[in-house]
Length: 142
Ligand SMILES: [Zn+2]
Image 1 (cartoon, rainbow, N blue to C red):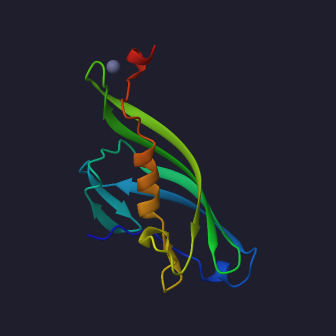
Image 2: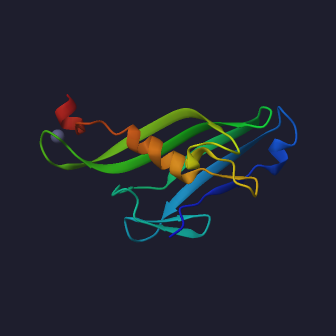
């Protein structure tokens, strides 16, 4: 199944300094692990259970042949507390930058030939990186 949330960047690429800003909202379907991004269903997602849609702001700025993406992402996933074992909602506010190029060795950081950028893998990767090794619920944190 597709894991795509392609943002068109043809206009941005025309001139250095050009930019676009987009709001994103990646919604879940009824099943906890099914996702919809721009109408595409995304099945299973690294075993993460999202409690609400991933929302955020993205700004793409053209340098010369590259694009810098500025991301602000908000997510809420279910985690199991490493101390007491209960499920709890883990909220994350992420702010990160990422450079995209046409011939990047990392597939996730490539500008596609049709001049789009698929932001989905990058967003999911950052959410995963932000999960603590030993997550603690609110009660155990005190
Ligand atoms: Zn706990």
